[in-house]
Image (cartoon, rainbow, N blue to C red; front, side, top):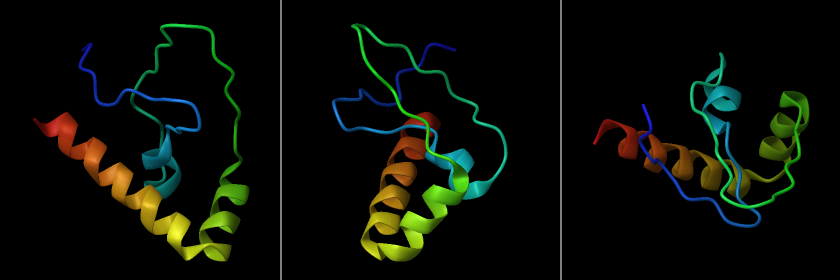
Length: 72
């Protein structure tokens, strides 16, 4: 399925559902131009969520928006 769920820009992230809910990432990401990506270990992600509650809320909100797009 080639459904576009989100268009990402510099500073964006993906894979949050797998990190928050556990399990395997189910979406694919395709870059239209050159980009650099970084991997964040689940333990580091969890530490950020604990240390910065607003970060956790923002990530969850974005996850909900993307899941809503998938269901459309």
